[in-house]
Image 1: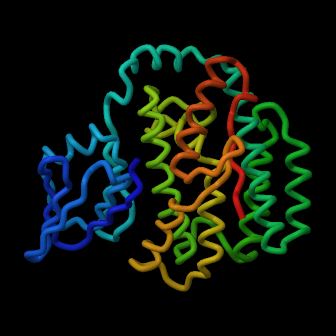
Image 2: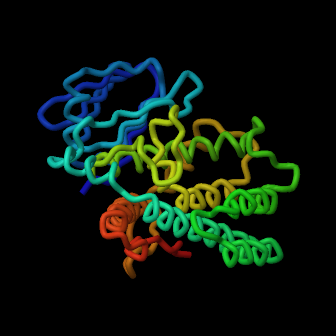
Image 3: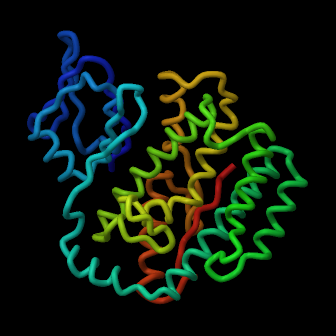
Length: 292
């Protein structure tokens, strides 16, 4: 089972040899077997790599994330064919009824707000936590009254201060965006691996968003990033802080009464969402619980 996150920086050459990722940097050569790699982060635009390596990374379903000149995630490597029965899965996906999609989205929003509520209680924001519980109690079909949006405003102001604005340029927002970007790549990989399209969501339907389904499904997992960023108490967000944030994905959560890595939890959860959509039963979704 893969477990390593490999971060590549600076002027580096990457290629493939006999099952290994070969890293060449300033005369130094290191090798990592592909079976050990879960995520490859290409953090520098000075990195060069071979097409053979790219093919092997895809075959091994390794999550590959490319960063821009500011070292922020900008793109990823996604397989065209993630499953042997992709065509059948896509046919299923386009026939999911509006009703089951609405019911699944309602459960996702409910779970997201519940996790926000739990984090606020954990950091001694009890009044705001209780307010979020009222939003959970008030959620309607397909979140038609936008309890998610109302909860988000209360949540972020309680967690990071009333002066905090999600779109501002600061270390906290940079860290949140970085963490969410990595999280999105995990969901893209699992959705494609299950044979479905990331473009067709259950709620998000922006024609300019290639990852509508991923944007839907990742919502409850954002709180894991939020918790980590809150605890880091950032004054800056540079290489050291980025690597610390990446350690989040080695943590465990509880899914279906078992401890799982966050990566495995995403795998189990994504599969369960598609079971729910196919079986017309939103109660099949397996949400995680944070393991303190």
